[in-house]
Length: 240
Image (cartoon, rainbow, N blue to C red; front, side, top):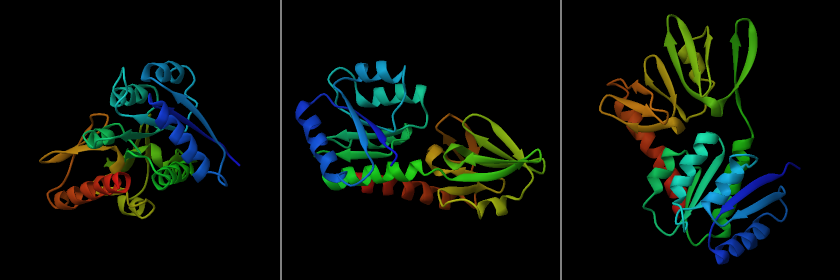
């Protein structure tokens, strides 16, 4: 059975012990979890910057020396994909969590149900799904989690990922049928993944990396609704 590597950044020893107890309770018959505890953001970042061998980072927002959100932003400089989740007594930073692609924002006290739901999300995320593309007569599997958006340009489809752009011959309608609901059409020539949208503007949207993309007048209401539903749904799942 594949093991999960969990890093917990929490400066409260009582909360650390609570997490240990809950992990034993919710994971007694599931995949092995190797958990490392850090009592400061600095200590965690020092190790993460050199090793980066972790599947989930559970961060307390209120760390003694360094704000947990600051730590998360530094993590994203090293790794844009690793799963992040926050622990907090307050919901002040819940929407900031989406800016760093957080998988969850969990209100204290942490419970077995909340922890179990988080671990299930991480497990589901590690079951990688692919988009199969024919690029220059070769079949290539592109991880769906890596795709930012699909764009029609010069009778081709550009697949924009976090590291490169692939060009294929296809129709946007055919592509949409192969994708999960978190890919939405925002313009006649664009399909964008909701997870990578930072915010909406009056006439378009901005991705987490700063890329600006248009949203058609016809799609504007639906895009706004999909965006709000997506993130409010995540907040509702994690806060309650």
